[in-house]
Length: 130
Image 1 (cartoon, rainbow, N blue to C red):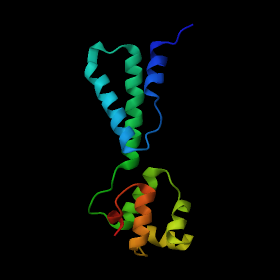
Image 2: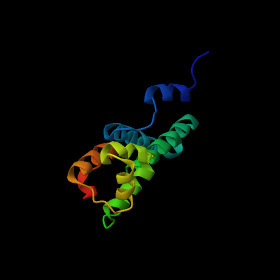
Image 3: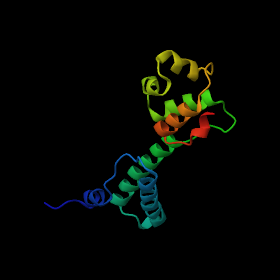
Image 4: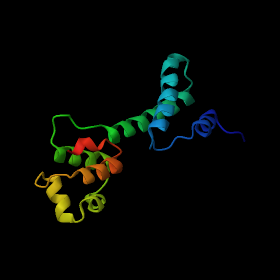
């Protein structure tokens, strides 16, 4: 028995959690094309469109930035929350758990080196933390 249209679309698009800006752009282009089809979209294309929308929304949520006027500790807490990371992921950046807690509570400033490491961890500009 042959694959359904939806299965063929899935094989073509190969949807997965979006981890890079390049993949985000690819999925966004495909999603936009499906949205533009409007009433001409098949039921299978609608299913794919909904799936791609969830993937794009997830990426946006994980890569959204806190307001510019927030403190570095607020930004760090925000990114920790939306990324799904735990405070344990910050220990290599700060050296020990007590330093992580102090940074998260705004009682310990974030050094330039720590900001660079945090930028790599969260895939944001290090300047967000200074």
